[in-house]
Length: 68
Image 1 (cartoon, helix red, strand yellow):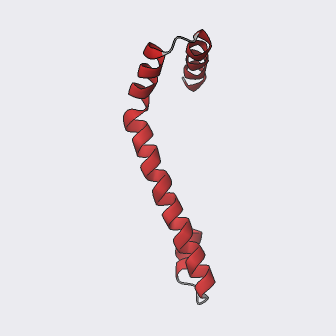
Image 2 (cartoon, helix red, strand yellow):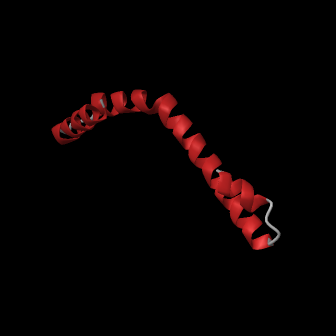
């Protein structure tokens, strides 16, 4: 973040443009993270309930165990 702040006050327009792109990219990622945090568990539960594939169920369970 410190580099983006420094880049935003740089005298060269190309460096400022890169800083803007980096900041917007971070904002976009943050909104995606918020969505996943708010909705991810429910979405995973729905997939688990609706899938007929044992492979998907086992995969989901194994991933959950890795995260805890």
